[in-house]
Amino acid sequence: MAKQQTTAERTGEKLPVEHFDVLIVGAGISGVAGAYHLRQQCPETRFVILETEESFGGTWWTHRSPGIRSDSDLHTFGYGFKPWVGPPIATAEEILSYMGEVIEENDLSQYIRYGHRILKADWSHEESLWTIEAVRNDTNERVHISADFLWMCQGYYRHHEGYTPEWDGMADFKGRIAHPENWPEDIDYAGKNVLVIGSGATAATVVPAMAETAAHVTMLQRTPTFFRTGRNAIDIAETLRELQIDESVVHEITRKKIMFDQAAFTDRCFAEPEAVKEELLGQIRKLLGPDYDVDKHFTPPYRPWRQRIAFVPDADLFEGIAAGKASVVTDEIDRFTEAGILLKSGETLEADIIVTATGFNMNIMGDIAFSMDGKPLDFHDTVTYRGMMFTGVPNLAWVFGYFRASWTLRSELIAAFVCRLLNHMGETGAKSITPTLRPEDQDMPLFDWMDENDFNPNYLRRALAILPRRGDKREWQHTQDYWREKNEFPAIDLDDEVFTYRWGAPKNMAAE
Ligand SMILES: Cc1cc2nc3c(=O)[nH]c(=O)nc-3n(C[C@H](O)[C@H](O)[C@H](O)COP(=O)(O)OP(=O)(O)OC[C@H]3O[C@@H](n4cnc5c(N)ncnc54)[C@H](O)[C@@H]3O)c2cc1C
Image (cartoon, rainbow, N blue to C red; front, side):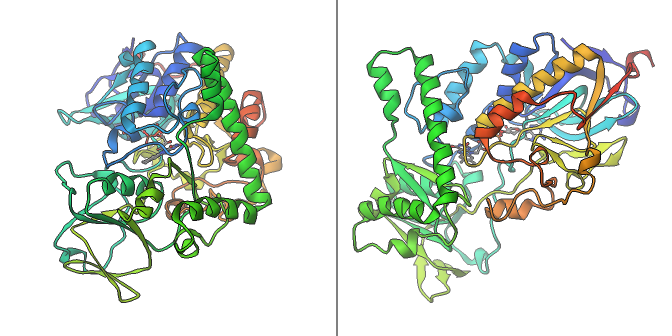
């Protein structure tokens, strides 16, 4: 499959460099989507996926905390090409099993090399190729691979290392502290008092799952979060199944219905935020009863959709609270103590175990040291082309999904675009493609990656300095708008002025 090349001089080592047309970073939901689409749309392409972990799945492989599940439905989080036949909100295990079927049915394992962590990637203008350096987990051996095109499917956060703020007195705490990103296998919480810090999607899954056997679980938050809740079922899918409609048709129609409803919901969040807010809070009031202080514990200070809204299937979080197995405290941490946490209000929360569901450390480029012709490349110096390529950076596509719709929708849109682009380059003999600001874009104002007024979770704010910049035109933004991008991406003119192509035979390293 791969043609061997002689030693790349810039690696400085006498190691053979394997060459592929395309190298995919990561075997999560996006990398597997990339492999599937390459097989379907570019069958002649020689490609490889390098993955640090020992198995596929990314997020769903590395997360082991109790209750781990999706917070969006699997009709849209699953792939368009493979029907999802289970309940819409799925456990990590169910998602892994679905991905396993995709890999098996499409014979994709032959392309995946597990246990390879990519450390460096260097673009050579002279040779028009990327050379990457990876390390094998088992032998610590360095591996060098070159590729014409680099497809970044690395996700957006550092696996195995969550974000934990530094609080005073953490070392004094006599119990255990666990982060969901790095869940200790031997932790036993049955009959214990658990304190979960945070109230995002992760906390919303950990709290009800732990509450099943813990003595009590307290969710401690500084700021409340919006939640949606409902049955873990989709009416239209149930109706179509009752009519014995083929699963592929059920999948397609259910996807369309969900996306339609999501787009309408997002529009309403902007057009009538107060009405949406009242609807969301109304659901919770109904579940928790008239005496519960919903204003204090479930009413965020921002309008809906400025941060991701997690779906709570079958209201399990709220049922746990109503049953007294879980409770919510809205306050600020003063310090950790031997027995738990002292709050700024003066109250103390005692705990045997503290779970810090406090978010991610972003690593938008897989913690890979990028360079071009040996010079370090800082993506913050670039402007994003539609949230999937970067000005001045040739032959590289990057998957950063949606926050308001399922991530996978974008992974597949980008996959289709990359395949179309690769075929176009193959047909025209182009060796490289580089997004470039057009003359009319030169004076365009540049902003941080994300508009603070639009979407502003803390983990994104913390990462703005490493994220590329955006312009004031749709071409130069990640718009978070699946509904429009699904029509725009397939219509992208590959001969548009934003793409600078370079033709000519690259230097054949084998002939050196
Ligand atoms: C608990 C949790 C629940 C979520 N639920 C949802 C949801 O319901 N809906 C939704 O849309 N989104 C959800 N997300 C966001 C989720 O991460 C994405 O939707 C999706 O799984 C990302 O897939 P990915 O393949 O792009 O990235 P990841 O799942 O992060 O996979 C990336 C892979 O790349 C590998 N990799 C990274 N860097 C390197 C390197 N240098 N060398 C080699 N390999 C590398 C990683 O090991 C990993 O396996 C959730 C996230 C979390 C943490």
